[in-house]
Length: 125
Image (cartoon, rainbow, N blue to C red; front, side, top):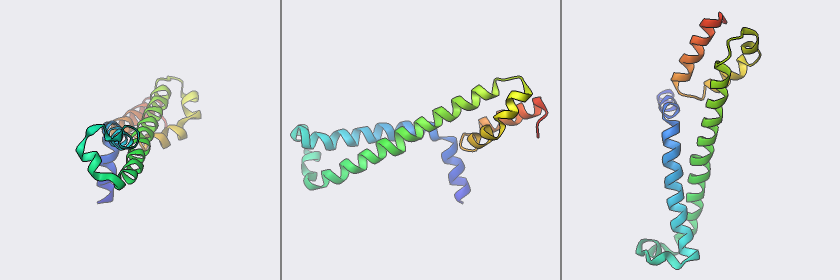
């Protein structure tokens, strides 16, 4: 069961991280507006009163951790893997092969297939 959840999250990490970034930003903005601009006249935000501090913390965690961090790590891992898979020299690829394998584990299955094809092309086991 946990393998299915992990593989689902791995396949859709890019889209989910964008959604969480936007959602976290909206929650963060609404809770900051309560303190900075007296709620901007939004009744929902004003009715929460003391809970806005907890919502501010929750919004920051969703924005920073689930949104920005996972988006950044996905993009950097993807960039590294694609750069290493472009090489046609077996010796250069072997130098970074273990790093590529580690990063591909956290990327969608498309990149795992690309790695297998490159290993087959360069005759690496």
